[in-house]
Image (cartoon, rainbow, N blue to C red; front, side):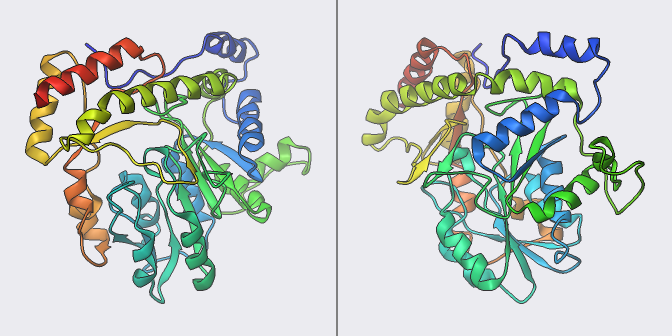
Length: 376
């Protein structure tokens, strides 16, 4: 069976985890957490990175750092995304306002955002689907003219960029995921990227249960106390150690994934030219990270049949998100602005093929061969 995903693991991971245990430092903000933060800061150019327990918590932390967002306020986002994108703001009793996506990239349609802005709008949350950037120049211009914050959901976007800028560093805040399905993993984990250093102290306090314990550990105060609201967003240093081993070989992992993605694309291109499937689109100025490889079938019935056919041939392929505005919670907490022209229709056509570090090119050829067989 060719699995859909195999979590990445670097050779040094177990050595680093054993080091944590040996040094009796396995809780949050240990040496490996700091190493990961520093690596991400250097790689992306962000002012500050704070490792978190998940991308969900990174997004919640970003929402808490924007005091303007409160009950009844509105946050614009696509409906084609994971639930955490909306949950972070629903927890603040804000209203997710969903707008349609572009059919080429599956990202939020930047041309529809401004029409959704009201006097209650406080933020825009672009989601960089498949590690391919949204049209950030347009989004940042809208945000600047209307005084809105931009929180990038870059869960799938590490090592990807837009016009030379790392995803997650363009808006006010950026959120990475290190879930086991992502390019780099710590099992469960994430990171908050902060563009403006004026938010760093508040972020550290919220992340440390509302205390100034981070300043205490740095020797800036002689004892720590409860300062503000907060929660525990610190991952175990053992998780960070597992991640750091991958970050040390990040380019190797990225190059391997790009080679797999390219093989898929080139092998399936004749089928796309024949009009049987559609392939991913990477706009000019965007550098992607091969987070996923997907194809689009004619409709949901054809997709279901193809999934079954691949499964019979020992290949595990999957669909992706159910649009949030069609879910019970989406109807309860949010609203869709404008026409759902593409969100639902395109989501029902999209099929994700196996993609992970370690997938052999011969396996890619086999998968593509079976896709071709299905259409023949």
